[in-house]
Image (tube, rainbow, N blue to C red; front, side, top):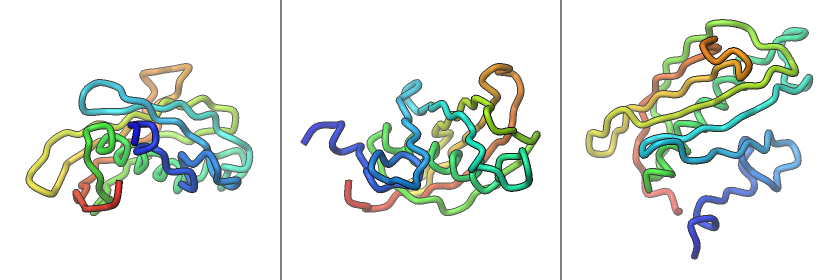
Length: 139
């Protein structure tokens, strides 16, 4: 089985290529302990008019934490997440989503994800500090 097959989750809401309702986001490795993806906000991602739903921002960051683990050869689930939203995001915005492992302590991993406006890289949209539980989820 190739690495591509191992890192394929076709029905995943965020990254699944075969999920017709999904976001179809492709995460790629970015440094030894991290990953990155780009996403353009769609109108249907809105909560309030012309504002991306905060739950979807959280979902993108949660997925970034999971992919950071995957690219480190691990599998895990989110045990805890502390999110901060810094600014609203409008449809059409191009986002850069990053995730990285900060620390590992046995089966618990501290990880961090960020979303930034792609056009204005210093503009932090949201951040997630999370604890991931390394599990025996089938690869």
